[in-house]
Image: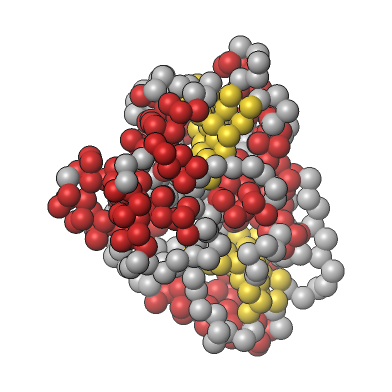
Length: 396
């Protein structure tokens, strides 16, 4: 009888880690992927089977449905995600928040933090008990993914967490707290440098830390740059830069910085005949109607094909920057945002920084003129390395 794996993931960079790992393991294990939010349409487009909270609706109280309906009535619904999937995700998450914090505190937390207040551990305990997996596998996202780790530990299920980049701490990413809270039996990281940093920083020694790489970078290793033109091509991994971020309440950002950067890139593209490809954050809606000189990427456009045609990556914190470095592209980063408290490609010595939009031109030219080579992050292929760790732990 095959061992059973439960994989839990959000969309964006998280599902792009889990999906190739599923392809590597599907013939050896019985696998269930629990898709959270935008992971569902991504997997559906690729013909990968998955479940959502809605799949387990018989396990939940009737209030989950009415709660979800009430919350969604005040939100703009993303048409990519089926309404009932959103209903059960929101309803279960808020129901658990009320159960853990109380009605008034839950209301206050949701009003101040939005979905960042969610931690649907009780829901995930029910799902894990229903499926009885031999191991739970997820990445290092907050909310549902982290809650799946703590839920699995409470159910006595072994856990493996895959860190998605360079960072081991900080609000958007990192596994230092997961190691310290003993939520993972195995932590797979991008490189030996990340492993050493995590080993030196963690207080708990329980987890086995392994430099496996992450599956996102496997295809990068196999992708060659193949520009068809001498025109400077820049790939901008764009996102909102908010004034406040709830994990760092003392830091005040400048939301207008993102708008000024877009305006400046639009002008530079026209003035210097650059091709600027903008890849918006998959969970955000950004209006680009006023930027006629920017090429806006579609949701189904291949990131790696775009990287293969580019010279420079511009981003604040996106993993796309690291993927570009792995291919030998230049990297320019927007610095001084609310997200840079702990994490910065510039501070890691990997990029040329931009603190003001007027620095963009010089930073881009500086990166273009550097002789860049792809950086080697790990040996072999991450999917094979992680598969080996799973087999070793499960005694296969």
